Length: 319
Figure 1 (cartoon, rainbow, N blue to C red):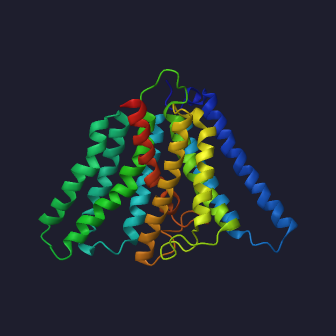
Figure 2: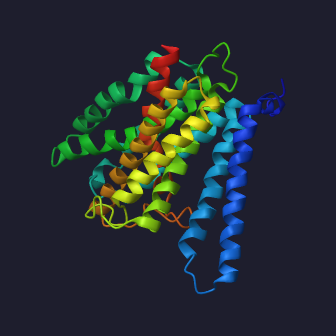
Figure 3: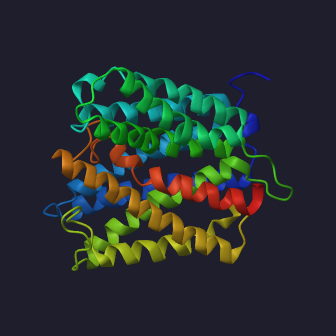
């Protein structure tokens, strides 16, 4: 088979439907904001337009990951983790200057983790970073012989690796899951399901918060987030999960529960990274994506929702 032959990966009507739905929503949003700006020039739509541009960029990344050859998808996810790891390492003030050389071990772990995901070695996949690298990084720090604030470095480096590599690698592993009889969307469908719901949850929480938000939920961490946006986003995402459950082997009740868990986990990921940014004193982790700062600003929700979704589905249908 030709390495770049994508025909095999475009023959699933469920996957094609959700890709067209994503593109349709983005086109609609783009046209809506354009027309809105023409009708009411005084309306401040800058943030919404910038967010839409970033949604286009993220949609392109994950749609390509489900339509091109699987090997390219794993490489793409690996590069995504590399960029996120580099971003968080560059802004972190909680790592000693002498630990910069130790971070190389974090980067070296990325291709290993994604190769393990590609091969589908589940037992090794779930212990390589949480166990092996968790032991190895402190050991390397110790043999360097600099003990001042070493405990902080032992905590920060493995956490950064978990947040940017281990968590995101679960998206890639979805493509390695074995086929289930009667479930045609496969790993690509599962990937689109969790990414689409996580991103839409961000959209829903932002929209409900803008429309009805009055009561701050965690003002010291994320002052723009409200209870109205949080509840509205979770409820809307949960309902949406039910209607696109054809991308998964989940039944009706399971899809509602999983939709709720994805929405809640996405919120957790968002505020965790927001807390890190507050500690560092930054609004964004970078300037890579217009309207949303750095890469980590866009995948923060996925860093928690991806593993939560993966282990629920894995234990229900693949264990």
